[in-house]
Length: 168
View 1 (spheres, rainbow, N blue to C red):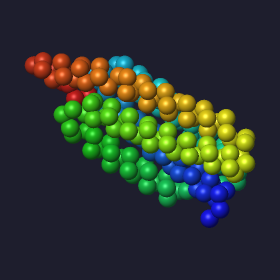
View 2: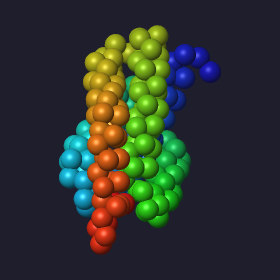
View 3: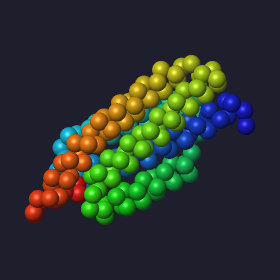
View 4: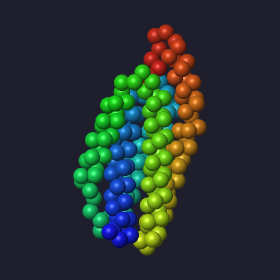
């Protein structure tokens, strides 16, 4: 496989990754009841993710790269499993914040790689879009890590109060 083929494969991976992120984020936001700031930021990131999927599809189309139905399907199944698994812990909001931060770091690493590969493959037309997506992922990761302490404190206060749901 040459560097252009790797780049194309990584574009397919990024598309599948964003489809997974969309499923996970939509599932998470639908269950957040008591943390309005977290819910609002995740809703914003769902919108960003949907736009990112469209941008990646434009890059795939411009480069005449077929989408990987298998990768997209497997990513959605993985997201479903993660969503279902996240529904049961009594500390769902805390674990969701942590796993969201970890996933954002994974996306940052993937887009950093994709950016270097785009440059090497000579796809200069896609570089600004990839840089924009990377910046959005970095902003989301920064927001999450800055708000994990507050979310944790709110969770602990709610969990100490009788008759108050804390997990979501």
